[in-house]
Length: 69
Image 1 (tube, rainbow, N blue to C red):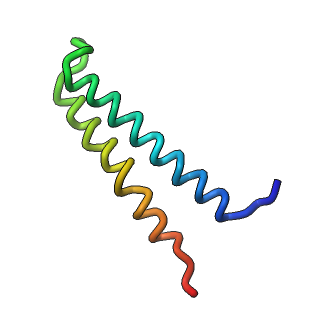
Image 2: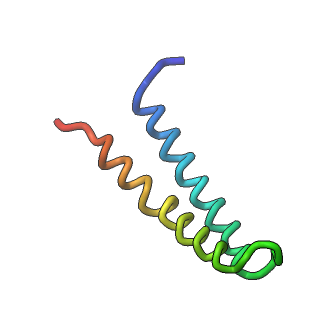
């Protein structure tokens, strides 16, 4: 297995999107009131953080890692 930085970055971007999607969906479940022990506000915050992690964070990372050629 090679130590290719592009492969590592792709893997990290994919994990970031997956983590954001999972957090977003879990936040929707919490915000809907399925878990009575967790306040609804926590679910809303989880939805916002998940949306950021899914939509914006990979773009910010890709821009930061962009090569200057």
